[in-house]
Image 1 (tube, rainbow, N blue to C red):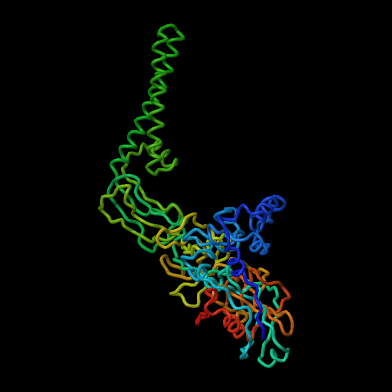
Image 2 (cartoon, rainbow, N blue to C red):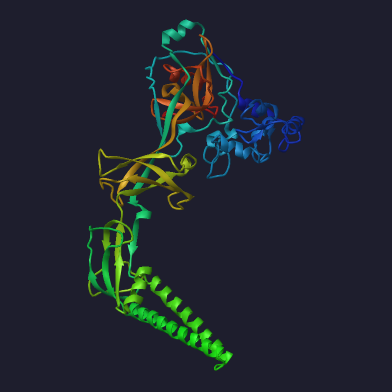
Length: 521
């Protein structure tokens, strides 16, 4: 078997000879900059003539940026327009604010300074057959953790590009048991696993307190009691409330008095017995008394009395100091701090009432999965203490900020709790469906090999030729992977025997620094 290669690493090394500065003044660079206005790449938010992701030939044609030691076509420091493009393809290190393929702090093995030219040829020796995986009809892709090695985008410095594995005869492939499958598109469902905590529905949970200072006279409800809207929870004796009622009744009497005086002064003025000044004074006092009545009425309303109760104070001349704390909606008493004879004030809640027919779950979403989570996505909740019970709901809110300690994003889901199994502060696991029955290319996981810096599959070009292809993968179920880029539908990839093909290409790269052997691959 012969392996021939034309590597990006070699091209990068060649451009370093005699390079000065960043290479932005070369003729090729100017031509591409001029052509940039001709068309725009919507996928990568970049002029097509400058998009190395759509046209990899730019990496070679634009040469090397000696100032930053990367290909000119991929130098985000010289061309900041490349930054959205790197982020669009998922190649961005948030921690160090640079493309992950150029982040030598996280990935020192990618530093081109450590790389050497690879041998141009290598001979195949032996292969061992592997088991053929089964392909399921549907796929559920879970991503419970931050991006794994299998989801890393291909690095631009990997010299796998251009390799070709050639067999002397087709019989060799049959003898060693090489088998292939066709890359096809299948409907898949992508999910995220999140830790969650059950909580009360914030729209159906309330702390209730006396709105006036006083003393608890009677407690009407206890923990666990069901209540309806308007039910009495406790009766408070409040001198403050009695004084407010008296002020209201006094204002009513004052308005009545000045209404009669105003009418009398107007009558005397018409008969010429009184002066206009006396009539104006009576009118002023009437206006002031009406303002005082309005203020005292508003005070009673602010103390928790309804409009009907204020009218009842007027009708009955009620000056009692009793105040009743009532439930504002139907539910269950989940907290009680009221005790007969206790002095209370508005700052101390006496009861908490919750409607348990609907509950919330607060989800912690990993920072790397922030762009996947949206309002309206279905959620399945499994509570650790309720084995076998599954609850279905929907995302209703996603936070606009990350937790500064955990670096996670909080999201909220709502669940119907008709049987009352869900209780506040339960720990749970939430599975969020972020992509439902989405058509995507998939390959068996046995076809994917990690060659040191990139994920590769071996594409069958003919009965004797197999091409290692760098691929960008989505999450995996363990049997199949979603292919984000690098393959097309209808291509054939090696499954059984792909590991030994990887071993063969690594024989030619030992010591090159690009594709170190990873025992855990």
